[in-house]
Image (cartoon, rainbow over all chains, first blue to last red):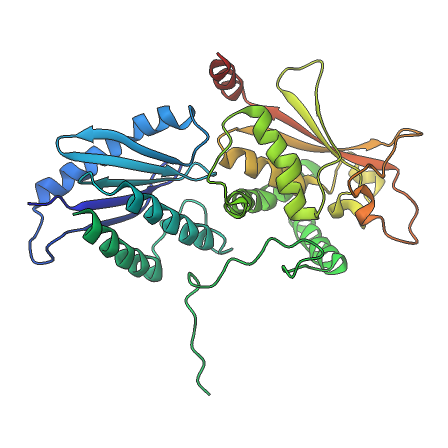
Length: 141
Length: 215
């Protein structure tokens, strides 16, 4: 059984974007495990904050390990955190995934009518990330 | 006629516009017109000088947040600034270069206060074509720029209060500093009598965090 992948973009105070991807489209991740995943990801935020100030790198690698899952993080210059909860393989793929997302994020960020704290509920962004997620997913799991 | 609408996320971000590259360059007069309209818009809605200044600053704040992400992304280094001095250098050189085509003329640290720094620009474009009437006193039209600086610093995690001041240029002070300082000298206009000084005052937690990182 492979673990689902959870991707969250966290702004200064709240999540800006969330996407969950399951390996088997048919299998329904039950509610409990979903919530547990979210909890794990958000509790890793403290560790992210702590390590954010110790390095100037944007890619923070694996920040937290829970059971068989790992949390990897990428921080932008504006302290926006991209966090990925995953099974634990394929570091290069994750790095390139984060770089792609970074590019999309900067483009969306520059839209003048988008206020800072609004969720990035862009249909296109979601679709693009879903495609990216699938590619990442296939190589990780 | 069929036109394929390109997804905004697929379009390239555009190259960082220098004067010589093909990046998008906006004419100074176009900016001056838009900026004067912006100032007039806020002036008609503000009840006092400080409110006008606050409005201009908050107008620039959003720009600062976006500029931070853009400039960092274009640098393509996947590195961010975590120290006070490095973020100040980032602002006075990279951000200034991408906005105005040149670095800020100087970055100074205040002697009296450990948490105050000054960024000096001899020809800020926001006040080149603006004259402040005497009844508005100490207002500086560069409040927009101080909003941009504050946005950049705040976005990077260094909360600061940034204010713009017009300081008289001393006799003999070189305003055409090396490095293209005279880029915005408008031909036919007399040299400016004041320079803009942006006073950056960091909040205490920023300083204590930076001191902790020092060790």
